[in-house]
Image 1 (cartoon, one colour):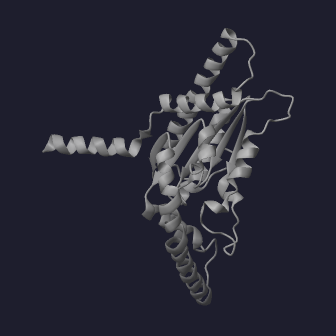
Image 2 (cartoon, rainbow, N blue to C red):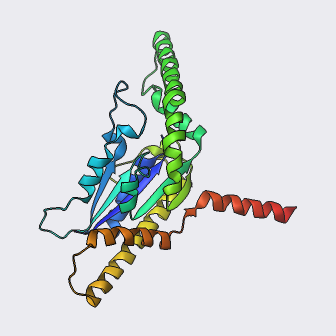
Length: 273
C-alpha cells in the first residue's frame, strides 16, 4: 500500500488543525479513491497540567514512527495520504525523513497569544444577564485571562523558542498565516471555515497544490519504474525514503514565502529611493 506523509506544523493557536481539516476535505475531492487520515500530534499529548512537560518528551515519537512505517496487513492496495499535524510535526528527524512534504505555518506571536486569550475567555451565549451574572462573568474572564497569560509566558513561549521555532528550518514550504479566532472554526461536514480568511484560503490552496504535485509526480515515476524494471524488493524501504527526500527538495527547494515577501518589499523600497 502506497502511503504519503504530509507534515503540517507551526506555532500554538495558529490554526494548524483547522487548515489540516480543510486540506483533508479538498484532497478528498481530488483523490476520491485515496484513504485520507489525520494524525493530530497534540491529541497524543497529555492534557493534564501535572503531567505535561511542554517539551518533545510529551510525544512518544518512537511509537509514532513505528505505527506509521509498519506494514499494513490489509489485502487492499489502497493508497493513503496521512496528514501529520501539530506543533511538533516538523520536530522529529525520523518523521521528517519519511515525510513527502513538510509545511510550516508561520504566524505572528501576538496573534497567537490573542487567539489563546480569546479561546480561554468565557462568552455570553444568549440572553440578557443581570448585574450579578455580569459581575461573575467579569471575574471569570479576569481569572481566565490571568491563566492564559501565565500559560503563554511560563510554558508556551519557552516551548516555542526552544523546540518549535527551530523546526521551521526543516520545512519544505514556509507560508505566513494570518488567522483569527473565527477562521480557526471549521465545519467538519463541509470542510469550510466559518468566516473565510483570504490569506488562510490562499495558503490552504498552496498546500493542496504542493501535495497534489508530490503525489502526481510520484505516481508517474512509479509507473515508469514498474515498466522499466522487474519486481525488486531489496532495499525498497531505504530507497523510498531517499527518493522522498530528493523529490521534495527538487519540487520545493526551501520555499519561504515570508522571505520572498520581504525581498519584494525591499526591492520596492530600493526602487523608491
